[in-house]
Image (cartoon, rainbow, N blue to C red; front, side, top):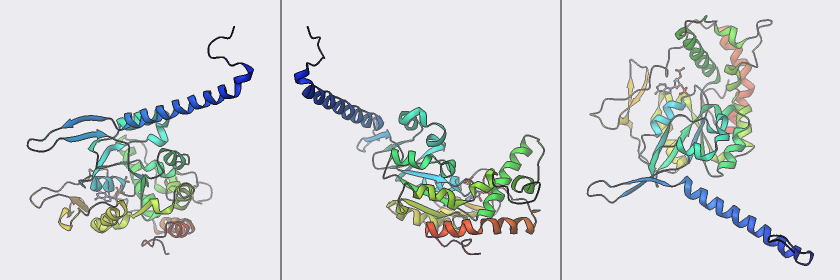
Length: 317
Ligand code: A3P
């Protein structure tokens, strides 16, 4: 006697195709179920006299992939003020540190927004983590990527300033920058130093270009974003294909902070980033040190500017 679910020799082929069909149907059903769950509305809000607005969480349409200490926080803070954009809080670290937790976890880290709003997150370590580009590509073929970079030598100094200020806070010994970025023995640039590695933009950018077309990654001039944020953010609006929102009077230079801060209306007090952004850099770094860094980064910079097709102030020596 044949038990249910078994096949006789004569009908094995059709039985097998039935089985394959069943598996395909199950996969499609699971996919549709997951897509539904990942956009499931959290609540519907009705403002008095206004039609009801569906508010839900959805996975990011835009990701700021880096680079660390190049203005990633300033960029997401400004973009998050655009009515069409909702920004995730903090650094999400899904594709590098929390990937095994799955998309459901990623979704919990996203902000609530209306269906026509774009969701953005930023995690600067994505730029330099080799496995991340492929993971992002598996996640979405259409996600828009933003990369903000600044002069690689200034970035190293900013990186060092952050390390130094953390040490000062913890009352730990504070080595000079040269101890961190140059080899003790022969004074050559320390390739294993994270501060050096991150500024080798071409190496990391190439990893992203292996997976994404260049048109999908917009490279923001981080130095330009400090000196003229409006000019840079307008370019980002164009890349994202969203309506123009930012105006000159929304950016106010704050003399005390030494950076631009933001406000929506003239009668509003401007909002600046906290003290950990825009720290004064040490003024005792010798020109020997900066020259050595410049020479080291020059071939990397040249390659990066050519790959990214940009002509920032530091692209040419
Ligand atoms: P410094 O603190 O070395 O000046 P990130 O957010 O990626 O860590 O980048 C920090 C850098 O953003 C700061 O480095 C600062 O130069 C830059 N930045 C750009 N616009 C800024 C702004 N409006 N306010 C403060 N920092 C800004």
